[in-house]
Length: 247
Image 1: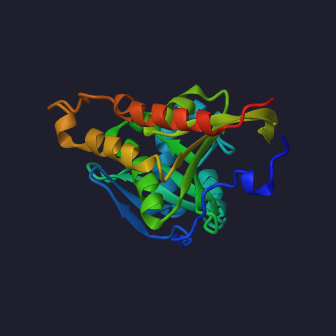
Image 2: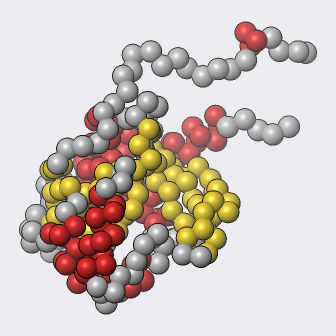
Image 3: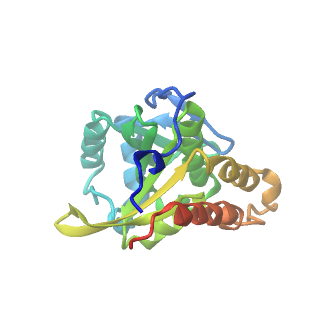
């Protein structure tokens, strides 16, 4: 039977929604970390020193490794002059920069942005401070009114894919032959979190960051992956039931 136009699914109407502002606060505060706008002159020397012994930290990024702090600073100056909005992760306890990330591919008209250019220094990876930095960026985006936050990475980058799930992003597929990075093909794994997913994910983030979740030695009692698992599984189920099957 032929379907009429009235039968065709068109998606829910978006009525009471206003496009959010572009990211722009100079500081985003956290319990263990402060996000400050990236300052090439201030941040390049410390980040260069913290990554010098581990050049593999740059393997899946579009830049680096860098031979000198000056060359890293030059790249940072170009980055801060782009449309992306970069933040340095400043550890509250030490006052040191432990990495950076950016809001990128910002599409305020549709309420979509990506968190990318993520570089966490080796010693700080999966620390409370670094984890809170990414949580704070996600939280800022949804509080500002964005409807979708994306996370993309090289499909071969298993640590980044695990991190996406750990933070509560849902895997949406692989874009094959998506980019050429440093002379090599890159298939890109796409992850996203929507405003519908966010309440359950936010609850998981808050539980993980609670001081009661850590013992006196700073060891977590429950992992973030444990806490976000239910939210991710629910989002994956919703995604699979919403995807039309080929006939």
